[in-house]
Image 1 (tube, rainbow, N blue to C red):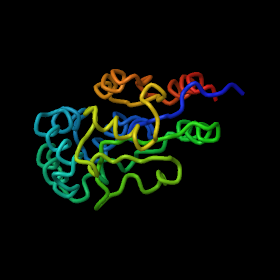
Image 2: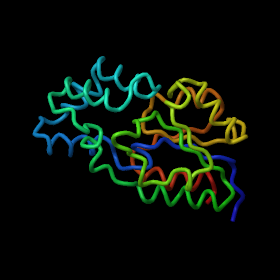
Image 3: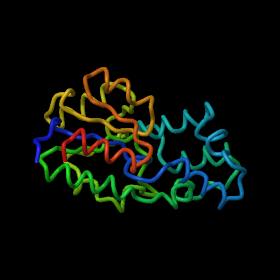
Length: 205
């Protein structure tokens, strides 16, 4: 087997290690009786919604407060809204298998995620991220979020690798340029059937 060209793989969580968030949101809208694209247009995509996410991601508000604020924007009840929103968010099994194979090949692995909170609903509970990855970086623990370059620098420091020795995968294109500017190889990962073969070639695994 060829030696890996890169020393570390850094991945986002939701949308990379899980199935598509667009599909997850669509299933939520159907369950809640909302018109299609309500969450993306009036929630996540609105200025108020983006602010709520940013506050949650850096720990300025907790998930319960996010639930109340987001529920008001999209017109649903607030109880366990994050849990209801992500109810049908399933693992991206091929991507998770790739992570296991990368570690077995000597590639360090990290999750770098803008936090969705962990109470009252923990979207990370089923994934055993500390057991599957060498480093786990939740944005709210450090009061900074992607695409802030500092959180990429922190992740590299925790991995003890240089940015140019890393591959970074995210489903949000806005998070890729700061990583690329540091020297990381970047990949816009929105479909594991496309992303995994590309990573296997990049990492020679």
